[in-house]
Image (cartoon, rainbow, N blue to C red):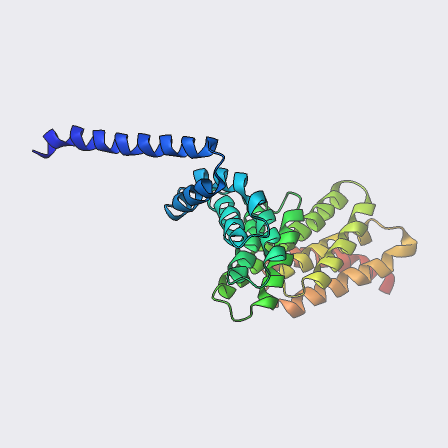
Length: 274
């Protein structure tokens, strides 16, 4: 019985879909702004965000300064967010907040705007301009709405972005360390400076142990390949760096490599004690 009725139901669905599409196309070509508003609201409430967005884009300029303008602007911003056009959703949520700062939707708009930039943030190895903007927007949201239901999500996203920036800064410093081993000592000097800056900027970083070890590597490489005039002081600096690593991480995962470096440093320092 059901199999016999299936073609009938399919035909009804096709008629409904065709009718909806036909009505949508008719409204798109219509000059009646109210009809477009009603259709956009209907599509938005039905979660047909893509088609709602097209109409909302058409009518939003005509609702500026009108009572429905706030509703239209929020729907437009959110429809961009829902179709994953985060560049536009971030931009329009910003515009919404500037125009309707006291809106009941201001908190949600601030959160979704910040989240839009969060979702635009690329992997750590690429340019982090969007990451910086997302962090700024998230911090503004956290400061403005400390009791928000969205606060746990906002904090989690901010932490994720901060770790991404940490990873990028650390990877750059680590690359200088590698270059110093195979090319010019200038890269070792740059590595040491970059690692010092990294630890100042991110004192509680997940990568702190790695950073301390790579600083030891860079200092050892610099010391062992220095001129006699600078060698002794740089050997002492390398030894001090090892002491800092062990103080912070007594059971460091780099114990074997770090000890091997210290053997070389201590062997060189013996020449001066003699």
